[in-house]
Image (cartoon, rainbow, N blue to C red; front, side, top):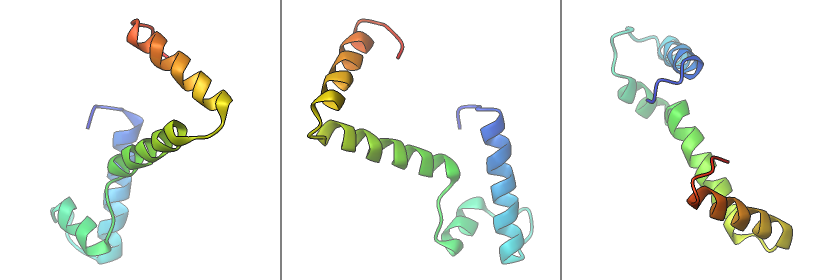
Length: 82
């Protein structure tokens, strides 16, 4: 994870909750806990949702959305943070 302060704390609370639900030790592997619950980390879920949203923006038929996206893409390529 990229050291997102509060996000790391939220992720730790999520791990703890999942382990309590399964009634396992705190030393149990996080991957095993997520696998048993059929879940993914909150971090992974955020990125999946971002990419899905990006895909919807790119495939949109709305001309305003396309125009805004293209302008932001061009300015980003010119070194401007959006």
